[in-house]
Image 1 (spheres, one colour):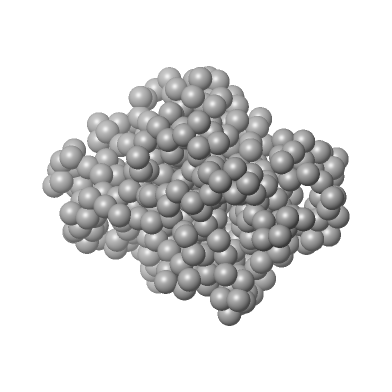
Image 2 (cartoon, rainbow, N blue to C red; image 1 turned 60 degrees about the vertical axis):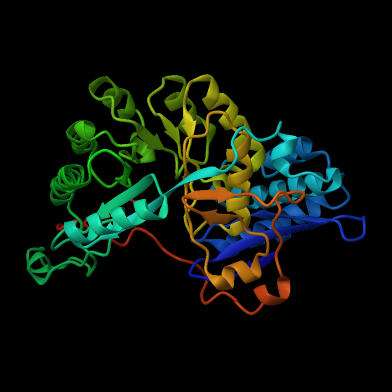
Length: 400
């Protein structure tokens, strides 16, 4: 296990050694919020289970490890399994002397188009950021706007004193989120951007599961004339059957899956064609082997991929996303994460970004390595992060 924090996120990397001198593989097991739990699962349970096995038996290792704990599809064990699985594919590619994407049948595209993130405190600032990204060559931009007086997702937005005074006595101090101001503000944002910039750029937006389902339906219908590339996570995983209702009422492209850990969460959405993009966090479902199967399943139903790819995916995870993107006919878009200089020093060979595209380096395996000496200079600053700290005016917790 290699635990390192060269940027803001707690990265978890699994390194699998073989009996062949110098041959090893690395995989991503990053669960930013609970990294030490994943590390324990790898060291105490998966490592003894794997010692002595043939690293080329990837499918058998995945299947046997998946059920070895009896209970399965938990995010901690899935991330642990992902780290091992990714390392085994890295070893296979190195043994074959080929990038992993060639083991999948080769490229179907030269490079991978990215969407970048634009967030701002006001409409003019947001418009300026979108135009700046267009000038850099980006054709896809996710836009998030601060909500005056309230906290929100994806943009720096502070709760005002006036809003805090409106809370009942005894509510724990926290940022205040309310769905109605957010919904109204988001509609206003797209009215402005389309009116000023037009339709020459693909715009995306992340609801982040925070509004009640009926309001999410209202929002999606209101945004349909603005022709979004996709609307992300309009519902929480607990409310996925609302996609069936939403699909009957709007043709707005929908993306979902960031918090999925079990096939029964995504399979109905795909087979019923209730979503247009699958947004799974690959390490959270058990890694590359299962993601490849999901990608093939989605292709049969016309659902495109848009794998989760922010800072809480390690550079190894971004390389895995990239190889799958290069070989997938039903690729849709890839989320961008700009790596810091420290992170690139820790992970030589990390994918390169240029002009709104992500490029592979064509080295065997994932094409990325980890410098353990440099990684050791960036130990964890704590035990992990936390989510779920925003509350409604009345004090009830906001998901996620």
